[in-house]
Image (cartoon, rainbow, N blue to C red):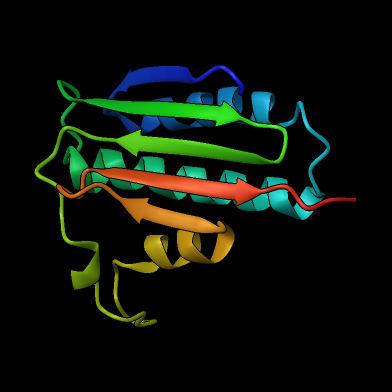
Length: 132
């Protein structure tokens, strides 16, 4: 079992890129398909932006927390915010004209497993590594 890593940062979009690069740096320790690395990065960016913008409402006094591990056959990450949470089932079906909701659609398309805690302020993403 791989070590679980934890990152925390103030709720600001300026910290998202650095957090993503730290996580992807560790994910690259395994021989992933290039497309899978792109999917992981896309989903991670979307989850972090959602946590900052929607969860913490851009409040720099609040934090975003990432817990993740790179296992031999998969990668998982949990992104948590300090917001009130939401009901993921309440997000309407994808609408091209809507200004919200696309992030969750992209996350679900990119990852193998997507779950939320009961409060709705933590998302867990899993990507399985395909055998070569």
